[in-house]
Image (tube, rainbow, N blue to C red; front, side, top):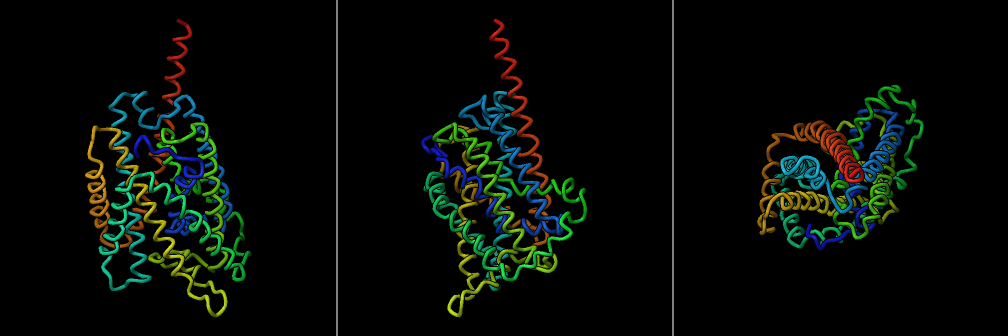
Length: 368
């Protein structure tokens, strides 16, 4: 992301929300259902409120550091060493989990449409798309994401309303699921579904209007929470029990029920096509943030080399899991703990300590 790239309000909201939307397309709604059962809808409302509060906290903590990101505040707090540690941590985050989600999506595509195609072929196609979009620059990725995000949002809404005649709302009971502890205490772990918050630590320097950061942070979380609620409700009200097929995208199963007369059947292919575009945009965004984090830590002058290097790393890491069960473990367990540590614990602590240091230094200046 070059210094000439500036993000508008709606672009910023969709940029953060695209992470959530693609996790919805994958298996995150099913993960929530597995965790909290019939209390999932109540749990989604709860974790949305928590995520909303966290986004507001991030906004408040960045007020003393306008036009700075988490790398700048880390350098202010602990010098270049802390900046490099945080930078490396998030580069690993962006590249490693881009690889895992790429593999997960390609495994699902293979099962649904391409059973005879090696999964590596599907991965290569996405890698080529990531390289092409990143060579065009982050501005092009953001504009494309702005264009396609309404289609992605619409696809989830259509699946919800088109299946309403099959809903059994009584499946929401018992409304508190397996109990208060499961829904509100152990269920707080489902906060990892709002991992798009991670991008909030990096976008302040790229905003056209620095005062818009609050609006982007809160609106993106609210948008993500509403659409997560739609997706979880769709699965909970349609299927009589927890899904047993790990390999299939849960929302894809719901989309197969949709019919609009005799001439509009099997619309699931349309939804999958939209989701392929969405996943390409999502992976391109992660690769771009990894590249620009590295550029900010170094004096790299050849961005195209970084694009190819990052894409190769994603390709190689995506081939490491031996089977889909390993992919699911990395996607739902390792990812959950990594997000909690990096985005919900470590980064806020750095911002809090940086604010304390800022106030201490300014207090000394005032006393002098």
